[in-house]
Length: 104
View 1 (tube, rainbow, N blue to C red):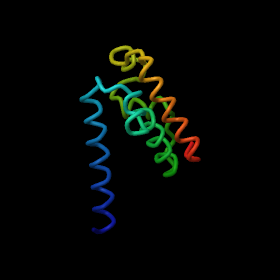
View 2: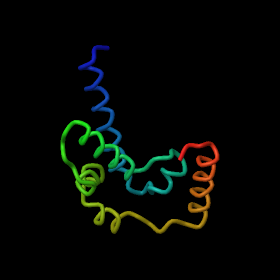
View 3: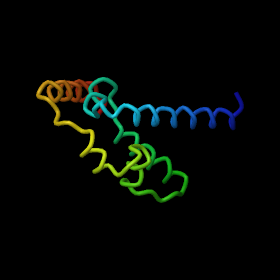
View 4: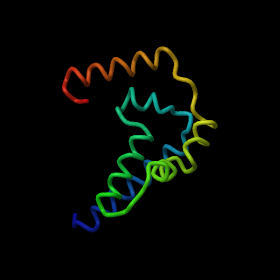
């Protein structure tokens, strides 16, 4: 695949992922972290870093809004539930496994 088309396909896949996450706010960030080791906030950080690598100033709140489709505080108030003790336990176990493997 030529470079231009590859970049366009990657961008389209990223937009589809963001659209999918916006369509499923019931999926909690902690669940994403436990299962996939990333969440919406990770995507916002990666988006911000990618913009800055290209010389575009983007603050974290702007990056979060690009991912969540609204200010993070609004999304959090509407959709984020308190993490359960089980979710927190699983998250901590994952973090410990990553640390033990040297993947912090």
